[in-house]
Image (tube, rainbow, N blue to C red; front, side):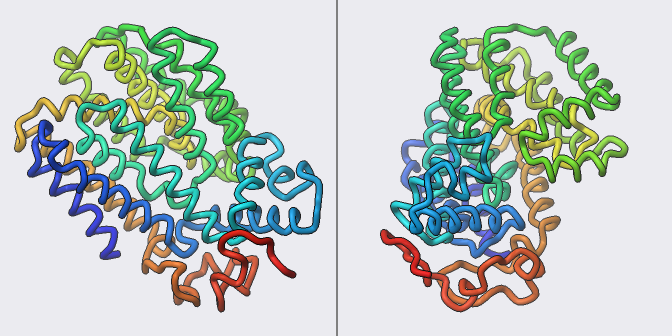
Length: 390
């Protein structure tokens, strides 16, 4: 667990002691930190739970299929991701680089973080604050939800085209993202709100309406429809676990909404800021609408960039030790530590794949490990080049 605390302390120190105007002075340190957290994630030995195992099995199976000369469309990746051909093709192409699941995870993680770094530095004037927010809210999810994060990374390239009102490149990118994860189609809504201007009263009415609607069977129907594109098995589990409203979702949505409305008049009104503000509202709307579902929060991820940009813009105008800034920082740290504690064995004790063996008492490995050869030799399958010999 110590390594996760070190990651947090580094970015927390930058947020507290480096002013927004000094980013260029500390840019190399920020780059190092992003590379560091990416490596911690990418080198992790099957951390995060079930998803790494299923993605690893699909990739290994695809490499085996190519070694046996099986037709592209009949490989494991295309059978599994029959509706997301982009992700399937990504798996197939990566088998030309490696046949080892650990290298697959590492390469995928590094690609994700390079893209996230590009988005943060491209869109936000306050990269340190933006990285801090992204890290606290989203870091641990990058350990496991590869397909959706890759789709998210692609979808965020479309934002400038929404601002410019260029539908063809915008929806082309969204459709491409959807070939990695169908839920990316939700991001298509960005185009229709990119230049909208909502008053405070309208915002409150819309969000309250989304929450009330989320408590009705309408949300169940839509979650079944949209969630099936995410993962049918998990959707069934999430729907079966429907109960009262999830307090954590309401608190998170309410907190961000309060900060945004409190600073409503000071938020920039240039086209990008307005678009990001509306994307942030979409994040809150979706979070409230799917408030009763176990995996409802995942539906809001494509709008997370709006929260990151808007809150960073608000805090970037605060004094270094401003009261509001300290409150937001404290809440973000609590969110980070909450996930760290809740995930338990899925994250700790930390172990890389650079050493053989498995973590003691890892019940996830006991349940989902599909290839026991990896326990004794992490690199028994070719690391770079070559196909597996069975």
